[in-house]
Amino acid sequence: MEAAAASPRSTSTTTGGNGMTAASAEALEEEEEEEQQSVMKVFVALPEKYKSGRSTVAWALRHLAAGSAVVVVVVAHVHSPAQMIPILGSKFQASKLRPEEVDAYRQYERGKVNKHLDEYIRQCTKMKIKVEKLVIEHEDVAEGIVQLVSKHNVGKLVMGAAADKYFSRSRKMEAPRSKKALAVMQNADPACKIWFVCKEHLIYTR
Image 1 (cartoon, rainbow, N blue to C red):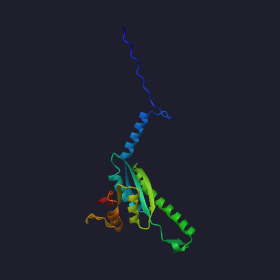
Image 2 (image 1 turned 90 degrees about the vertical axis):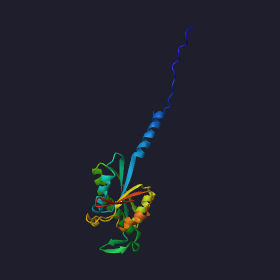
Image 3 (image 1 turned 30 degrees about the vertical axis):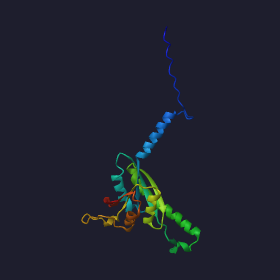
Image 4 (image 1 turned 90 degrees about the horizontal axis):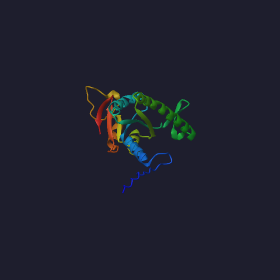
């Protein structure tokens, strides 16, 4: 008696409406998860004036954004709205002005801040580093940074330890000197690693 020929094994593949199989969709999801995990966000807290913060960005780009991991630098700024608003050559308390006058000046302020922060953006893009911009408003800059760290689950933060003019090679700075930096060091979420730098030199790591 001849043995019955084995019938070919049938396989079925589930295909979605876009033509993607379940297996390939799962592989794509895993790939996206791995990509997200490999991206490292570094927040850099910066003043509005580019001249005052460019050395802080330079340190972050050289030391934290030069590795093999995909790095996104977040240019973070806490804007403290002016309480005295100039009108026709004089300055008035914001609380004494009409709401539309205050709103108009606030729009002007925000536009000026964003224009200045764009200089940091260009500094990053010249180094071919991905960059984002984040601006929040708070009357107290240090408190604003602390809130920003908590709200955005910041794990890595770079900020100035003091103005560059206070850096000296002959007198080593061993801790942050500015009140703002000290307040952030004391009050920011302990889960956030913070590098305090001055004139492109690391001063202190928390």
